[in-house]
Each structure stands twice: as C-alpha cells, then as structure tokens.
Length: 190
Image 1: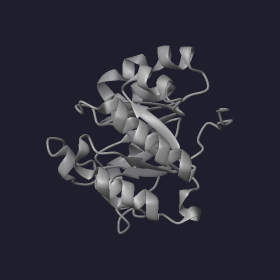
Image 2: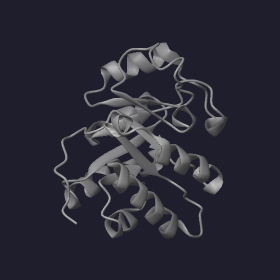
Image 3: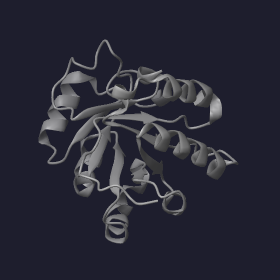
Image 4: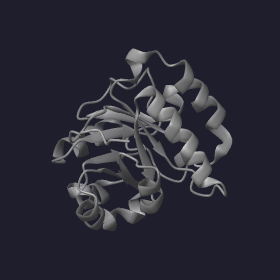
C-alpha cells in the first residue's frame, strides 16, 4: 500500500481509543455510522496499553480507519506502528523524551505527545502536535486537576506548535476557549 503524503497536521480531531477494550464496540459503531463528510480531518490514536491481544485490536482499528479514510496513530509502540504502516506515533508524556529519536528514524510520521502541564508542553516543542489535558474534569484522569479553559488557552497560545484540547471536551464546551488547534477525546465522538 502506498503511503499518503502527509502535511504537518492533516487532522483537527482525534479519537482516542480506550486504554482497554471496554469502549471498542461503541467506537467501532461510531466509526461505522459516521457520515463520510465527518471523516475528513479526523484521526484515531490507538492506545489499549494493557491488552493481551494488542496487535490484533490495533489491526482491527487500522482496517476501520483505512476504510473510512481516517489517519491512524499508534500510542507508545514504534514497532507496532511500523508493522501496521501507521501514519504516526503518539507518545504518552512519560515517553516524550523519545520524540527526537522517533522523528529522526521516521521523518514522515506525525508525532504527537500527551502533556499535562506547562513543563511537559515545553518538552513537547519538537513534536508535531501536543495534546494538553485534562482541560475539563474527566473520569479518565481523575488523579489530575483539570486545567480549565483559561489555563489551557494561555498555555496553548505560548506553544509554537499546534495544541489539541483533551479531557472532558464535549460538544457543549469545545468552543469555549481559545488557542486549540483541534480537539481529542473519546466520549465527545460517541
């Protein structure tokens, strides 16, 4: 399969797959039922870190993404991203020190990273995209304090690269803050 020519940011929305299999059926149904025009500018980050059948689940997601024309990124696993010819790699915050090495070995990949504060956002300056979270309270990051719209906007505007809002973002609040190049999430797409 020929690789697509990727611009620095070919999407403005990212679906984050569950960290486990609990949301797969809902995400698959959302992908299957999504209108074609909604797929433009949409990508998916496959996480599922603790899944025993991670490669098989990733292959299912990859197939669904390709069928819908979505950009497909693997989180935290360079080998799996290579195996599935992913469009790029997402690095959790604790792996952000690997951004330069990954970019060197895979210059055509889109490299994204998670950030939970201003210091992490500064370290992410060489990534193509930072996902700053949680913006609002969310069940998936209950140990972190929400940044709030004002703090998110301030940090995003100071960053030289695109920043996506992640965490508690939904259709009601996604327009209530400035500085976001896009949004990422799970439930906001279901």
